[in-house]
Image (tube, rainbow, N blue to C red):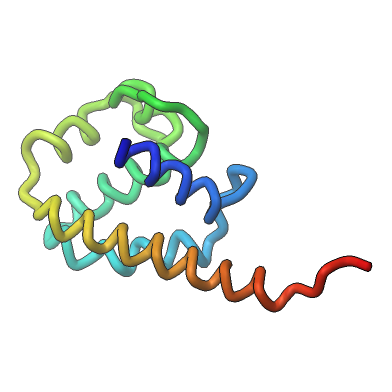
Length: 116
């Protein structure tokens, strides 16, 4: 159920599937400190970008490699199985990002005037 809530929240943030550069930069800035090695950071950013590129419940590293521009799933597999990074810190950063974006949207929605 937690996964579904996150997916709904992300869907509300990115809307129709567009992944605007400013949102990408903000999220990646929050996550950059989690991945101390450049190769891990680049693989993580490609992984996230591929996850958000198209809707879907389950995707394998093979399915994510193509939208990330990788010929094979090796980089994604290495990120998940071999690279050292703190998943709890990554989750906390992602949660801060989602909560912040939803709060900004709530503020925008409140400032909208109803159509007469």
